[in-house]
Image 1 (tube, rainbow, N blue to C red):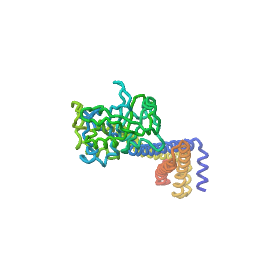
Image 2: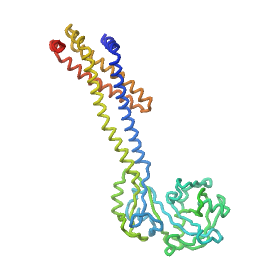
Image 3: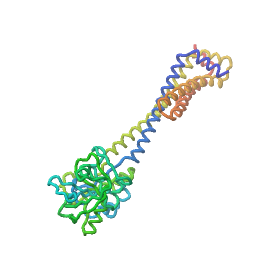
Image 4: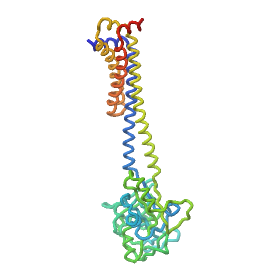
Length: 400
């Protein structure tokens, strides 16, 4: 009987009921949007911590990473042994470039081909995809072979065409001198045989790449140090960025823009974390905004439920007073008022949840519907309790 009576009351005031339903649906969609946005931003934040690369480069005293920075001896000791930063380092990228002679061909001055000893693709920034290059490898080989000590070679398309090479060929190179510090690093100019395992398509320069470990091994055999002209690495755990920054400042000199360039040190460390920090800051700001707006929308739901309850009670005040005068128990009168508003709020929240789900806000839409319906019911309960707390005489006098 109670539910039937409530449904009749709702049907007799269609415009008021539709307005309440619409408000409940709109607030439910808004709550769903906030919840979905927060979840999406939290997922993006986790991806930023896990997937974004924070590159760190050893630089000169002025903080500028320049070619020809003479890093003495085995660069691994600078990071791993001497300063104990190994826990923060993903993998050290080293590079040394030599001017070479291609086979027995005479090369004109100014058109000197180069051979770069690298630890991997990350050690050669000129090979990044944005420069329009692509790679073709002999089956079973790839850039990971640059981490070995094998005499393998990846050459540019210009060298492939000039020397009539094919993948899998054995090719000999003669090292003439180190490009950036010729007086301090000279290996024998004997012809060194390499296996051509890859070609760099779209690269017009005459350049080749071999494993850093191979030339390092050759340098040790000849009683030389293999200096590296550049060194960089990727931070292993982005969540330890600040911890790493403090540790690195205790080990490297802070970059000084007024310092003169020195090829022999002291060394500084450039941490390329601007994009990461801006990304994290923006995502964190959005998450906090969603967290702040959610309670505000809940309060708004409560207020709308309260106002809707007041409007409903005022519209039916005369009949409610007659019911009380006729001996209707307070509990039943309370239930009638509460059920009507709670039912409208619940139906509106369900409509909003379906709309939010169709918009792709995910399962959080139903949680938002529950919160919205509860807030509407709470607001209606406050109004019903206030009406129910008054005596019949007070209600009659107020009506008069």
